[in-house]
Length: 136
Image 1 (cartoon, one colour):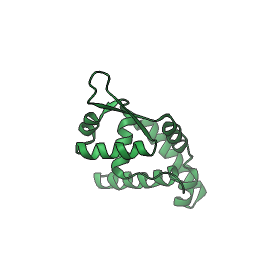
Image 2 (cartoon, one colour):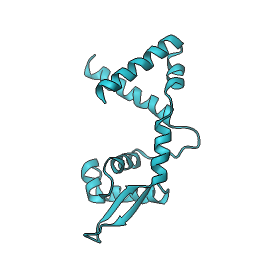
Image 3 (cartoon, rainbow, N blue to C red):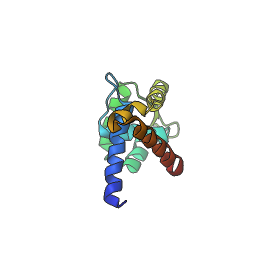
């Protein structure tokens, strides 16, 4: 496998992941909102500035994304206790529960639709599990 194949495989796995974790009626996020939310999940109680530094988005974009995520009830904000000018962001409890439910969805159906052959679909799922065990 070369770097190009690895890149294409990564993109394809992201597409499959989206099929599994996204259903009709699920909340959709812009790529920027998804990146900000993912950062806040990994780094609870972050400031807008810290999110900006880690994501590479301009601070105004992070602020706007946090504002939209807050309006949807996905994040909560509070003033920093040591510096009232700074805002701390954390994921709302209900959002974490919803993310957990979506993440727990089985990949079997999506892999089955993609591969077609049930035996090869099972083998593909086994190989993906093995790869996850090694890399994650």
